[in-house]
Image 1 (tube, one colour):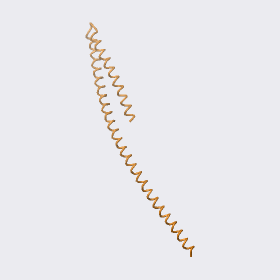
Image 2 (cartoon, helix red, strand yellow):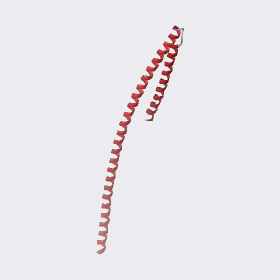
Image 3 (cartoon, one colour):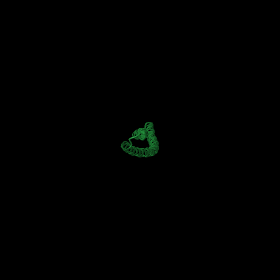
Length: 131
């Protein structure tokens, strides 16, 4: 008679352990799932913030790039105009070369400015590629 009671108590204890272990594991899994869910939300928010910052920086770089392109176009047109004036001056002025030297200095100055703008343009393009 004691044997069936002992077996019943052992089975009851095993059942309690299995039941308790199951619900403990279930609770632990739910907590882990909630933790990872919170981490994912945080990462998504951080990614959105970084994306917005990148878009803002890219817009600024694009505006600078457009500005530099406009300046380069303006300098090119000025250089073409000065080149035409030089050619006309060379044909019409036979005396001193003072006008020609003045125009040549202006062309040299514009060449330097164009070179500086090209360098800045290369840096901006490199920055855009890096993003």
